[in-house]
Image (cartoon, rainbow, N blue to C red; front, side, top):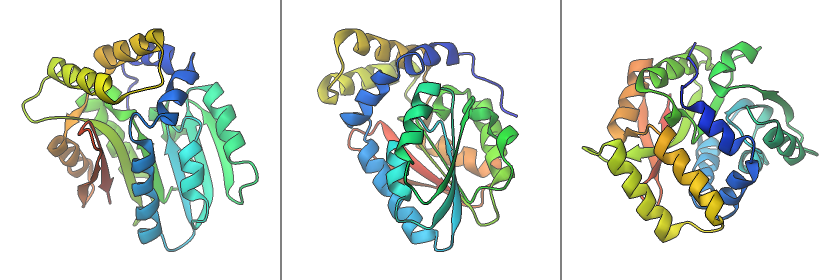
Length: 237
């Protein structure tokens, strides 16, 4: 079982006590949620031809997940998030859906404790990078252990450029933030920048691929890079 990241306290303060900050980030598409979830929707459409279950780790309010799964062959959804506020919105987003949906308030890394069956698809976005590299590997091994045979694991995370250290990453993030981000007031911006500076531990593209292979996945590949070069989606099977 993956141990909880020591940096999670600050992340919790920002995105649990004040979910509205992250909601603004999503609404303004500052982290390319729209494009990323479009990729997820297409891959699910292409690869999941039979009824399937979907595990959404660090699901937040499930705004995009609920829309991705609408019209798909999904029959079961489980969303896990540490924010009760976000989960209350997630429940609303699945109201009226034909998909059986369950919501669990918990740290996403503890997901194996709550499963009663093997998920066919597991998705996590903008969360695994808070773990140390060794914790990332243990987390991905846990994923591999519970994933159904022939299942699909995807993650959407920030990326280090080859040779870049965390200080340089923060400078690159800050430059991107100043150029592209919108919708946050000065206090919210300071919260967000502190969060990035103090808690984020991204990996390079090749390291994300290597982690998947070391965790036991036969296929690990990048399937999307956002317009800023900060975020990429990886697929593991």
